[in-house]
Length: 214
Image 1: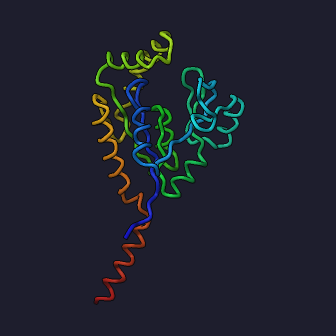
Image 2: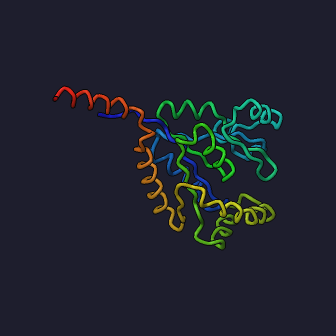
Image 3: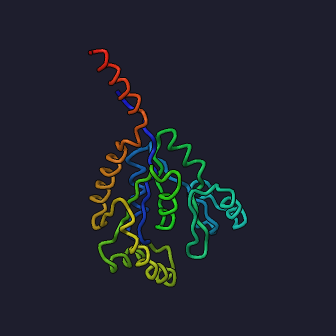
């Protein structure tokens, strides 16, 4: 008998360049019932980005209004811009039994873990194999200027220092192996007792059957 399942809030965090965005895309391709939390941001769109698909692009005034109304599950100020996760679509998804994936930093992770949805979170931190490899990956992306890369490298240790606040920590020295470990963690977390509200009714029915045997 298949039990109804509550969705997970799956948090992936890492310093820039450690691989969380690539791993997020692989997870979405692996399971089409898993949806990506589309963050809101006040930064300008990059070339090719689409509002509502890559981000919800808001003015600072709009963003501050949503925060004030409690409409953001988490929010942070990063590299001069605001980022946050709209709460309503996340609640709707997990109530319908769909997992939601978050590609966010440690500040956002803490806010979600301390929220009223915190008991349904699964948090995973991705570490790079080395700092030298982290820099190589940032430079290899070709997305940022040398100044931005330098800023990200300076921030990376602050992000790494929060590794112990997560449920699981993976060293991404091989992308394929890390991806397989991630899938295993998610499959196990989906079976946590709190994610299966239908178990209560199932156990009650077992009790009734047992009593009928007496």
